[in-house]
Length: 317
Figure 1 (tube, rainbow, N blue to C red):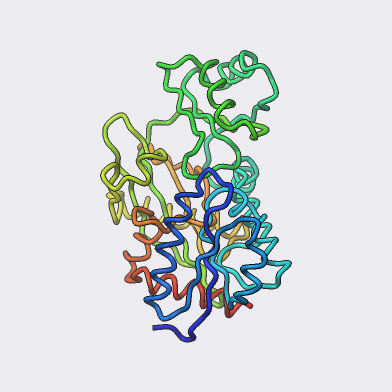
Figure 2: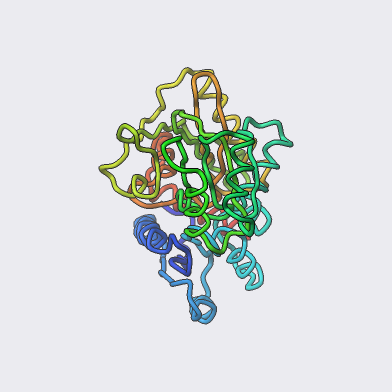
């Protein structure tokens, strides 16, 4: 299947809150790479990672990592220093995509459709934060940590929860976050679009996927990784015009953030309105992940997708 057999270091785990999910992704990636004819080696992101990577001397590194420091540019900078080709975006693109507030400012300047938002510092009194939020958006809001993925730390305040207590809980759950991003609560359909951007080729958008969950639930951390908790509808039951618009936004967001290889844009669709929420620069590769589903929808099975990604990184050099 492969143009060239590659020795691939698959990084996993680390200190992230998503370390266990990362290890699941890494195991799936390694198995697919082996099926595609490559020689993968799983390496934990710990204090021994430098010596293990240098000893392996891989042709390519695949960071199957989720959350900081694997997605925020830290590991990418480490690999740049070592001079190793790696799958995914560079330091700048990774950092920009991981910071929800920074990414939204990029989207706004590019004219992409996003929700209004408010940035509140977590070193203020929760009561004062709650007053500021209420004045801007009322009591139905979503509180988001700036630098987490997989909906970790996201708190939806839908009116049946005390806003000040919700703020206290959000801050306590993510004590290292310097600020919270606040958006108005919108009751919409959750959809996503993957982008494949291989070296030397034009980026292409995967078909739109809609994620459905049980009534009164949403695509939170639990529902993402339990196969019985959500369904992926491919293609999403949306009109052709809306689907094409969502794909176009995904491509624009990928480009504006300066990403490469792969990304996944997440949206809310409410009636005729579309809101770009965020872009993931290292989408999950677990058995329940959305990005591999998008690839399969255009005829790329998982080993073929992984082969294309490592060959792209290797050719980029």
